[in-house]
Image (cartoon, rainbow, N blue to C red; front, side, top):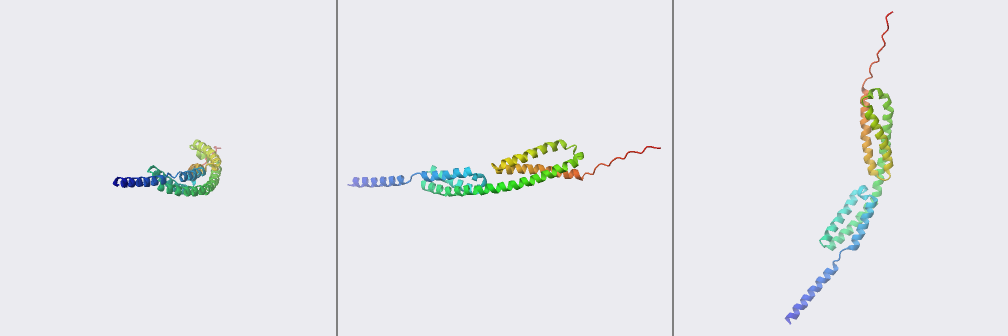
Length: 199
């Protein structure tokens, strides 16, 4: 009889263990939904244009992945459930972020073109004073012309790349603006008058 009671207790214990093990399944559906949201956010450029929201989703995702490794499926499920809306928010914010960067770069290009036009107008007036810098000016002038075109071409597909390029061009234009101001401040050499011959 004692043996029978132990057997029944052991069987009940094993049944409870199986019930708990059976209930604790990996949250595959939640993981798949969060992964789809993460992929959509990446495709929208959220990692670049909505970095804060994307990072929140990535933190939740990474936490859930760690819980999965430890077989803590309930915690992992909650992590995936938190990650999905964060990635969705990031994807939605990416479009606005990209537009903001595009608008910023568009304004920067207009300012660069204005600065460049002033430089090209000033260059001929300073030509006599530029002899030592003429070769560098010609090389940088070509770089600026090509850079402005490349920045405009890049703007639609890669606003952040265009922003970086615009920053480089601004530094180049500012360098020549300062150089031209220095050259303009140098007085012109005095004009030598021809000596009058004796009568």
